[in-house]
Image (cartoon, rainbow, N blue to C red):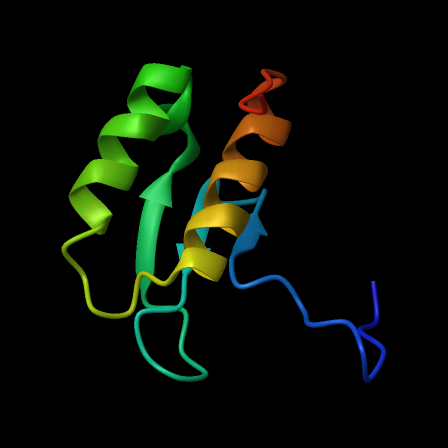
Length: 80
């Protein structure tokens, strides 16, 4: 997907080849990697969100994209 001027690109990226979610730990750098196998259940995703909330770079936007990507990959819904 190409982002239009009014649409922002997702804050996280999926690396299907290496089975990872890449998080932007610094501006323009995807240096924080989490294995998709560590995000197989909603409880595991929640545990990672809890851990990542202490990181200064883990913004609301990154959190939303992270939860969405993890839930889409494993086919569960984390919406209310």
